[in-house]
Image 1 (tube, rainbow over the protein chains, first blue to last red):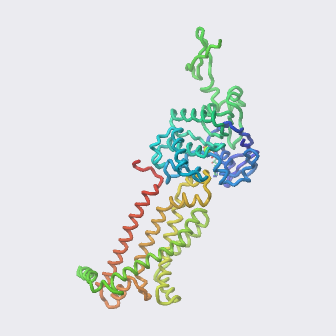
Image 2: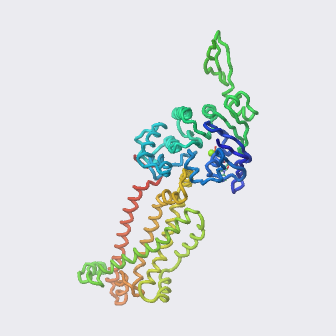
Image 3: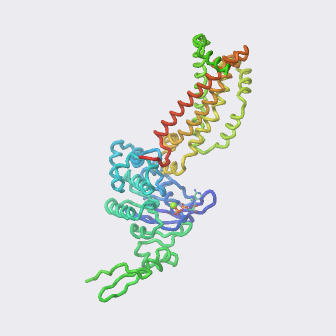
Length: 271
Length: 226
Ligand SMILES: Nc1ncnc2c1ncn2[C@@H]1O[C@H](COP(=O)(O)OP(=O)(O)OP(=O)(O)O)[C@@H](O)[C@H]1O
Ligand SMILES: [Mg+2]
């Protein structure tokens, strides 16, 4: 469980990135933070592994106030997938993925075997193991970043727009992979995205944020779509737009139309 | 043209080559002075530069002092040091170390400073300690600029090491000052040519080292092929 207790962050230049934020991200579940650019998502995420220290409040992992932990040890047991991959340019793909296991004393051979398996998992050709990050596309780099975040088999995963730079097909594959992984391994995941569809797909709990990390609504996808808290949320999730659907009866079947009247599919017959 | 052929004759004359006062011995001295001066300067400047680059503290102080050190007239430093330390090797070594210092310091800290902050941030985010960030990320990625700084230090020092003879030490400057005293211009020219040859040799050596480093430590920019 990750718990934010009334955290706030004002950067030295006076920017209030997070005003007053409280949330519980339950163990074994995926909590998705969504919100427009600059609303404080990355700042919140980085408080968990102490890459940012809150200027007020505290962050807890189970019964542990993270402020009392050794940051280096803390970070090694939390998987962190960075917004822009953040690979080490002077290390080969395989060594980038193996970084944390190597730091925690896993032998090079074992770490490399694991790294190759993870490359399969994120859909990277093993032939790329010997390349340097500069020789990969943005989407490939991001997948290396995801593999690196999983390498030490951490219980907590912080994922900052991990699929932002991959094409829609690969993105859909990676999303399915994450869902499958989550069904098997039950990690506690904090996931950031701009994409409400991705949030609805992956999130057990979805947190919609306004500027200053002000929670507009938190709940399951079902709850949010069924009862958006206000205009802002309704607008944000696309109710009133492409997610405002219509059902029309044609003969003895019911079909679903999207916001602009295009047919999406049939309602399955319930017997 | 006449001087030049005479100078080359002087260099190739076997009578000038051997012995404690011969071309080879003086060349070796000159080489040694240069290497020792740069090494001593590097011993202090490299850790200091990395410290400043890593902590991002004291950058202003470093810029100002190394700028001031660059502006010092080496001949003046040498004379002053000579007055204090007397005739011999100590004074020219001090002057040469001071000459080498700023370039190396600048190379060391600029190398660290030029690294993409995202790279350092991600290394910390993975759980590298401060020391590991320094040794595994900042030092290897800063290497090309550091080597550039050491390279320019070498070139400055190899040229200026001729001044060692001005206060009674050895090196190729001996021939220069001797030639000046006896108005033996071919000998002066020959000495200068030898210094130039040494400088070129150093430069070629560094070119190969830089080439090697580029192979071993990719800059992080996109490269042409896999
Ligand atoms: N180091 C910093 N110093 C000053 N201001 C900062 C710093 N980091 C972030 N900010 C500011 O804090 C606010 C929140 O930033 P944050 O990176 O958390 O946003 P975000 O929700 O992750 O945005 P995006 O979706 O664009 O990644 C922004 O206004 C940003 O400009
Ligand atoms: Mg962000």
